[in-house]
Image 1 (tube, rainbow, N blue to C red):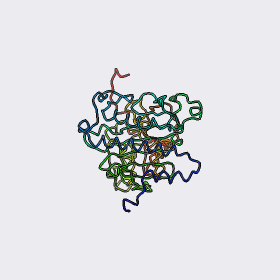
Image 2 (image 1 turned 30 degrees about the vertical axis):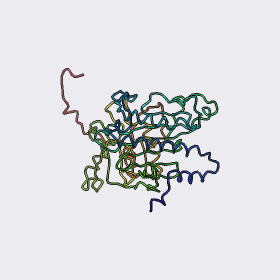
Image 3 (image 1 turned 60 degrees about the horizontal axis):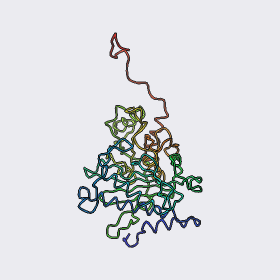
Image 4 (image 1 turned 30 degrees about the horizontal axis):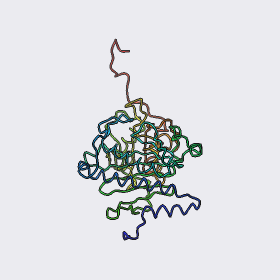
Length: 365
């Protein structure tokens, strides 16, 4: 399709709004604000080490500091977080927001009007890959603020954000790679926009993204295999057994360590991604954050015909308990995710470990 014939993001959102004659347009405006933040982040990421010489002041930023997640921040983490906040706080569409980089919910400044939505986001997912020039991205989710917040105008609290994934109004991600893309769902399928650098506009290039139900690709960090639960180990072992194993076909394995890049690959050609619960750290029942990673990606996957799960239950049905709650995540091609869920539901086979040959000692507890 000629570039001039492609819808812009604004045109797409106007068309979606026409399905709801009573809609106020606030959601459209908020999504456009998010898209502007993503354009600014794309520019910052593209400059990389040249950021300061191209007008981006990184002096005094908390690069190297440890954020609430216990992870080391890079200057671009801080810049990206600021870009999201400054672009969305002023317009009167938000009652509050929450981010991976902030311990507590962010309150809309008193001199700005307040709105009826909540924004949660991971401003720069995969930022540890920036130094090696691997694709990174931003993830966002939009929720309705509780009616009590809207009516009273009170400050938002952590509890206001603790809504299951099914409550999301819109979600998506921006991918900063060879091209910048914005992938979005407003609950009516999934669409992808590519940033036209000449016009500075997101243009609709992927109008109806669908995840193939079957796949021969899986993504998992095999360095954690010794910590996996039996159902995950069973699934991966069967994939690795290939054509001569129980699956009867060969699989390819991928691992980028950037969830946005992993999700995008799966949306484009199918696959399954696993960052499951394991025994590596008993205090963390998963590595990924429920509210601003697992839920928005899960919403996108389900709207594209895929599936998202903890392995034990649908991801979007999980009721959050804390703002930065971590969780195990499996998403992608529907038939493969359902197989992994089935393995979790089945009785685990008896361990091959034989006590007869265990290490013995008179002094063993």
